Amino acid sequence: MAAKTIISRPIYGTLSPQPGKHHLFVADAEGALAIKDMAARAPAGFFDGAEIVFIAGPDGKYVAALEALKPAQLHIAPSFASLLPRLKQTLTNAHMGLRLYLAGTEGLIGQAMQVALEAGIDHTSMQTE
Image 1 (cartoon, rainbow, N blue to C red):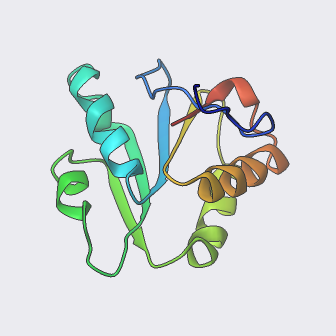
Image 2 (image 1 turned 30 degrees about the vertical axis):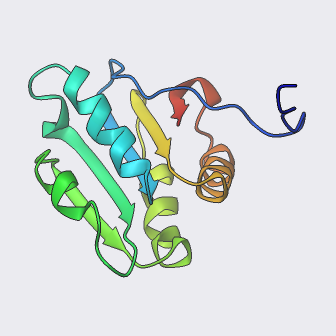
């Protein structure tokens, strides 16, 4: 018998490069791998105007992989609470054309999505994995 899934549990898709003027990635844990996988499908120069905010674990795992993408900005944070002011400011000052990519743990995705919605970011401008 197949295992039943929790009905209220969100189902996330796969990140894919979207047209837009600015790309903001917020990730933790294995979410870095989702960004790296998406980068393999992204057009040349996609990360030239991208900002990645990553909550690195104590071992700094995946930081080098994200640095290799050469985003316009890479911010490493120790926790969601520490990146919250930066995220709120970035989303509040965002212009039309922002694409928001959320990847990693369910907790991070839920919290970041809530902050984005409160800042007026349309849910259709967000992707999750």
